[in-house]
Image (cartoon, rainbow, N blue to C red):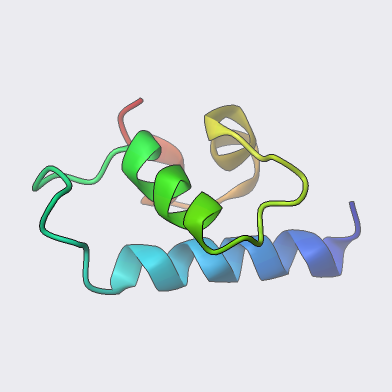
Amino acid sequence: MTDERKQEIIDDLFEIYNGDKPDYYAEQWTMFTLLSLYNKTGKNKEKIDGFWVEENCPEPLRSLEH
């Protein structure tokens, strides 16, 4: 994965995290919530998971509960 693609994924995740969360999800952000919403965008062609987020993303994303 290129550094450019990695940054694109991180930017997409932050856009989701900072946006409005649908009511049908729990009040607190979890890794599952974040990745579920990212998967719905259709952009997760690399099939990143929570471990990828922990290793590559800055706070607060890397510390989301699994």
